[in-house]
Length: 410
View 1 (cartoon, rainbow, N blue to C red):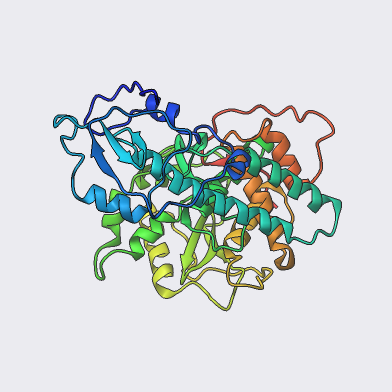
View 2 (cartoon, rainbow, N blue to C red):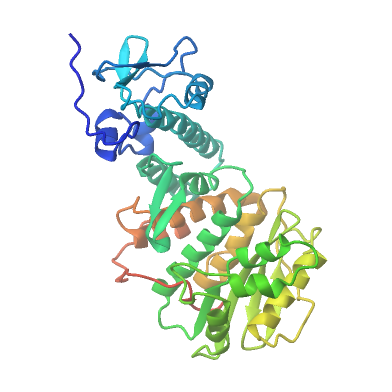
């Protein structure tokens, strides 16, 4: 006889966390463990019915197709199911908890994460290394990838820097030829500034980030609307040292040091560039790894409107464009933009189009160090930048960091 499960369900079809952890074979898995787990394809022959039998134990979770599950849920059969005497979902010969859809959804996401992780491994396999530094960097990236843990909901990873979660996909996009999205670019630049503050805490030059979302929201507004209404309503969450653009303005204009540089990543026509604001000289420039796609008029107008709102008194309306190595593809603008910040804040070599994948590896390693996947973030910072193990203890002290960071200027 198959024994019954004793669940703590208090709602009609809710599977609480304790029961979920007990029933799911995928709880607390690293990427390496997840890749080794055989998630069988969904079974098209399975159907779902309500049953008055108690849930029973199973060795393999019956896994109906998403189409079958959606069709069942669309009937609202689970509403008041327990009040009507039903205790489980009958799938083949197994009676599952009424909240089994949460288990199936985890399998769906596990398959997606397996696919992403496998693709990342294959991407690294194809890299032709030219020296020991690159070989070591790939080794570090593989170790970090295998050690990452994923969570049930959308593959979320805890990210202490943001006091919230960030999708695992943000990280894995670095280990591919994918175009980097807004969250990935902003988070990676934040991680560079954090590392810069730790590495060069005594520098006179301060660095800060204005997230690209400020301009993106303005560009997405209805035609003819006032951008200042967007600026007035914009709110920044942790870890910024300011809550809104009014406080950001005070922070930028009243910096305690004479040297203050602020970075503003911009996405213009699906192409990333980096606006660099020199508060000492009251000028701005744009670092562009694909000069054939300059920032468009709408983006430039939005930036100037932001400067006006922040009362920055920037002298030049048209940004200067320093000479920059040009990317050789359509998808390296994100890594190149982040690399420009790395070069100035951390003294790392400038972006090299032919080795763009090495920039991605380094940025993946640094950002991953913030999710607790590595034992020593300082070691990862050194290794991902140089490809070598540090010979001595750096003596750095880790701790809470703000978005604005200190470092030496290039």
